[in-house]
Length: 143
Image 1 (cartoon, rainbow, N blue to C red):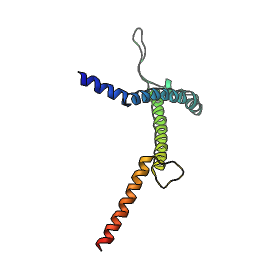
Image 2: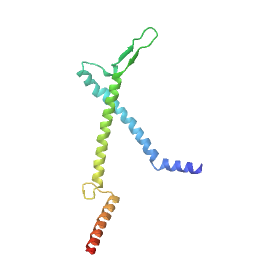
Image 3: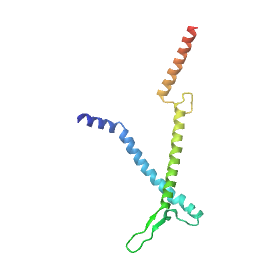
Image 4: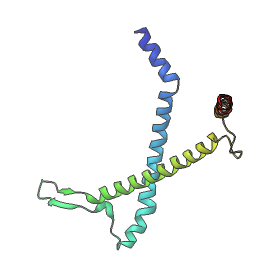
């Protein structure tokens, strides 16, 4: 039991759990931003282009409300809005990750002088260069 508690403590403190929590909090806030973007910015002009049709209220009625029985309907308009939300989120995440990868590849390139290369990448590049020189010397020595 003591090892389990120690392992959990190491897991929580070393950042995995903290990184996950931060990701979830940022994801939730990002979801609110995207929902507002879709509902308040994208959907109103789309509604104007479709003669003031509100997509979220679009539905296919399977059974009308009669007496105490409630209406049964398929709300395809809400599904369309959810798909638009998803596409915007996916596109935004794609652009952000592509930007991070671009910056990361620039930072890891030892010849790129625009961005300061991390020390570990510089050391690996130096080791690679030394190994290439050593291999060249060994090849020349064999000949």
